[in-house]
Image 1 (cartoon, rainbow, N blue to C red):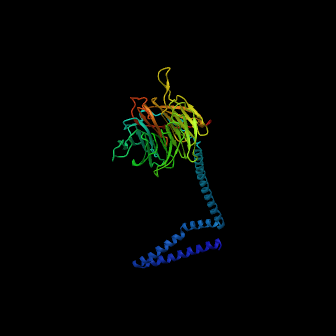
Image 2 (cartoon, helix red, strand yellow):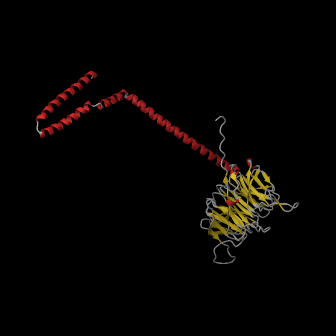
Image 3 (cartoon, rainbow, N blue to C red):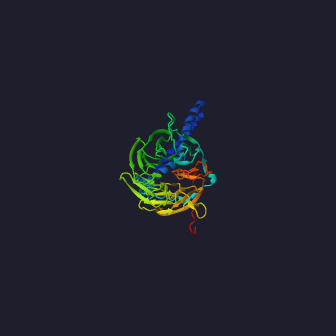
Length: 476
C-alpha cells in the first residue's frame, strides 16, 4: 500500500468520525437526563477514542517501528554476534589476567619449594629486623632455677620451658600466663603424678603440635600430649644424660642424643624404639633435625659436627671449632650453624667438611687484661630458610647475625640486652618474636653463677623496618 493511499484512508476515517460525533451531540441535547447520561457515556468513550487517534503518540510508535524496520534481520544478527564476541573477548582477557597472576604465584611457590628441598632457600629478612627496646621484652618468671631448654608450639600460641628445678611450664604467648605446670617428681615415690626427678636438659615438639618430648639427666625421655600435658609413656635405653631431642618434621619420628655418645631413633606415635647410631667419641651435646630422614649433632669435646643419614646408615663428619661444640641448629636442609666454648660461631654446608664461615670471639672477651678468654657460645637459633641467626652467651646480650650470600659470611646486626646465661633460643615460625631461656648458670654445669640474672623466659618482639618509599622517576 502506498503512502498517499494510507494518508487518504486515515483522513476519511477521521472525517466520518467527526460527522457521527455531531449527530450524536444534537440527539443528546433533545433527550432527557437519563438519555444524557447514557449518551454522555458513549460520547466520552468515543471522544476518548478520537483523542487517541488524533494524539501524536501512535505516530511516535510508528516512527520507532519504522526505524526498527530499517535494520534488517541479518544486520541485527550481525550486531548481536559482534556484541557477544566482544563480551567473550573481555571475559577471556579477565581469565588470562587471573591465570597469569595465579601462575606467577604458583611458579614462585614451586621455586621456593624446590630450593627448600635442595636446602638452598635463603629469604632475606635480616636487614628488615629492628632491634627492640628493652621495655618491649616480656619476662615470664615461674621457674626456681636456671632455664635449660624451651620450645614453641607450631602455631606460635604457647611456649614450653624446662629448668634445673625439674619442672616444665606451658606459657601463653599472648597473655604470658601459665597454662599448665608439670612439677618435679620425687624419686621412688609411688602414686604421684609423672614428671622428671632430675635436671631437664632438652625438649622437642612434633610439627603437628601433638607430642612433646623431654629428656633429663636420669637417662629418661618422657612423651607428653602437648595440648593437655598428659603423660603418655617413657622411653628408656640411654645409659647417660639425654642432651638433645628433635622430631623429624611431618612425622612422629624422634631423634635423641646422649652423653653416652649414642644417637637413638624412636617412634613417638607407636611408643617404639627403632635403632641406635654410634660414632661420636665424646658426650653428644646437642641435636637438630628437619624434614629429611637425617639429623645433625654437636659432638661436644670430640670437636666434630656429624650428619647422620639414617636410611644409608652412614654419617658425615665435620671439623672446624677449637673447643667443645655445645649447640647446633639447622638453617635449612643443607646448612647449619653451631657454637662452641671457644667463643666461635660457624656456618656449615653439607658439601664442605670445613665451615663456610667462622666468626671467632662472637660475643667478645672476658677477664683481666692479658688473661682474656672468649665468652662461651651457649645457644644458637636460626629462622628457618632465611638469613637470620641468633646466638646466646653470658655476655649480657643476645646477638643477631645476617648470613651472607651463599652462607659464606656472618655479619653482626644488633645486640639485645639480657643478663644471664642464654641457655636456649627459639624463633617463632613467623619470625615475629624470639624466645630466650635465661638462667643464672650454664645449662650443663655450674662453672659460673651470675647472681643478678633472673631465671626467666624472655619474649623478644622482632619488628620489621618499614619499607622505604620508592624514589620518584627522573623527570616526573
